[in-house]
Length: 445
Ligand SMILES: Cc1cc2nc3c(=O)[nH]c(=O)nc-3n(C[C@H](O)[C@H](O)[C@H](O)COP(=O)(O)OP(=O)(O)OC[C@H]3O[C@@H](n4cnc5c(N)ncnc54)[C@H](O)[C@@H]3O)c2cc1C
Image (cartoon, rainbow, N blue to C red; front, side):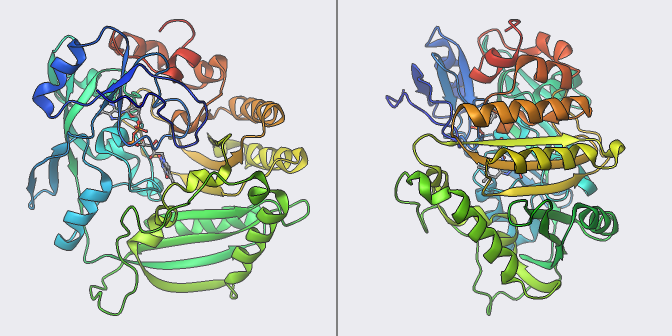
């Protein structure tokens, strides 16, 4: 059992204290670890969730770090079977050279397969293929009483639906089978298009949906008076295979590290404005076409270890919503307007259109519409009241917030936007809990 009791989430807010961390050495010792303690337990992957969904204040974390074995791969179907603590980083390192890629990947590769299922993570190809759970064939779930069950759409399908996007509350996933995707090589044919308004963004995203597997936009809401501008990135896996002349490679943890808790001036409005200006101006032409390695395309932030320390000791809050597009983008415009007027600043703003593929999980976050994500330095009360106002816009527009990124939404916001929560309750393991679910779960947990 680990003695470091102050585990952080990626946003480093909230600060909570655990009794300890259980680290079973293998799948066969999970039940013994769970039985060895009395207090509540929460599975933990690599702690890349931003808020408190990977924290369990006053209880234990159950680490999947040693559940790291590959069990087998079928090159005819692309089905990989591995333990839940295997990271997407490890899968890429082993399988890209063999011509296989992840079916869905979030913006960091340092997440585990268990974490990717439990948050039903999405990526830049959501508009084409849905979220991670859409590519999971099966997994084995272990409950705190030692019961084990294989779950798929045919076998224990209700448990499958509860566990995909189930925030680690239904039990611990021991192993999973996922469908990998065949690719020719490690490169992406990429186009970057500058846009100067939200209308232009909507036009480009509409035009890109059919022909581009990956789309995402970086947004600058802070340098243009009463407006936005940004860069729309879209791409497809390339037929290019040679790697000799390419400088880009799969980046490993440890190559660059953010060395200290930064002082607050580092992310002050002038520096963010200057960064946005430089980033937007770096691309001279309206359209730029290139062939890039998958690593900088999908994981630009992974280059710097602990970049979250850039926000200083108080940490930061990520806020990510999705809203249906039925209102012609009015909700997204009002959210951006409100942020602009508030005087709060976000270093990174990302905008993307989600597609129609129906997610598998009862509590899955994605729905058809536009998703907007922002990182805010934690400046306290003024930020929290702004975010409450943004939540109201989201709920009124029929949208929801992403639990993997959340540290403060109210119980009523959660309940009113996750309509299957009542059904989900019966699948929660009586010994499993999290800081997040105790905060938003309405006293039922
Ligand atoms: C830079 C960055 C970019 C990101 N980009 C995206 C993105 O584009 N899209 C997106 O969807 N997310 C994104 N995320 C969020 C991240 O993908 C998710 O939070 C992911 O679930 C983290 O996985 P993890 O292994 O670190 O799990 P943790 O954060 O440790 O845990 C996440 C949840 O999974 C549960 N869990 C973990 N292991 C198991 C298991 N074996 N069995 C059952 N439950 C388990 C935990 O209890 C917890 O509820 C990003 C995060 C970062 C830091």
